[in-house]
Image (cartoon, rainbow, N blue to C red; front, side, top):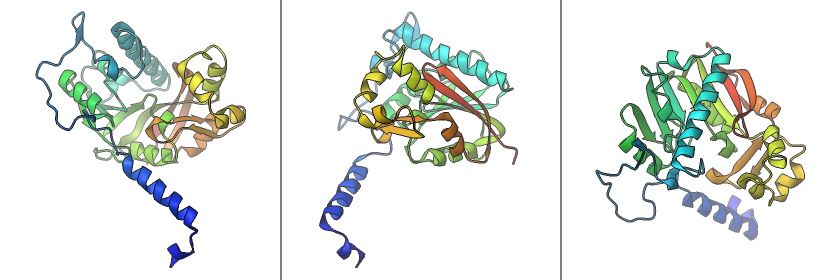
Length: 281
C-alpha cells in the first residue's frame, strides 16, 4: 500500500540508491580484477635488505621506498610523543591495534620500541593485509575487516588503538565506529585518531594549496562555499570520501564512554590528532 503512493520518480531514485549500495562491497577483495589467482612463496620486495610493499600499496605516502618508510616512522614518533604527553606510554601496553593499517606503514616500526607488546593491524584492503601477513608476520598479527562497525575482538582487548587517516573517510557512522572501538578498548585505554578539520583547511588554502587534496576539494562547490563556516563537509561518498569536521563539532560526536584528552593540529601531516581515553566504567 505504501509503495503505491510513492511517485514514480522517487521510486526510481530509491531503486538506484539500493543498486549502488549493493554494488559497494564491505571490503576490497584481494586480486579484485582477477577471476583466479595464486600467491607466490617468493613475493618479498626488498630495498637495501628491508622488506617494502610494492608502490601500488603505498597509498601516496612517499615517492620512493625510503620516503615511504620514513613517513611511517615519523608518524609513529609523533604519536608516541603526543600520547606520552597525555600520560600513556606505548611500551607499557599489552596489546595495540592499528585500525586501518594499510600495508603496515606505521605498525611495522612499533615492535622496535615496544618488543613485548602484542600487535594487531586491520584494514578493509585485502591486498594490503595479504602483503602484511606474508611479510610482517611475525611479530605482527593482521586481519581483513569490513566497512561495517564491527571488529573481531572481545571487549576490552586493547590498551591502545590508533587510526591514522581513517575518520577522514568516515561519514554518517562515525559514532558507531567510535562506540565499537570503545568496546574493544580497556577502561583507561587510549584512542588516538586523526581528522581533517579547520586547521587542515587553513593549510590547504595556504602552504599546501598545490597538494593533491587541495586541488581535489577545490573542484567542489560544497567545499568552496562552506569551508569558512561548517560543522561537517563531505566531498565524495563511501570509502573514497574526504570528510572535514570542525574540531569543536567532532567533540560533540564523541560518545560519553570517552574522555576527551587532547586535540593537536598538524600532528599527522596536515591532519589533526584527537586523543581520547576510555572511561573507567
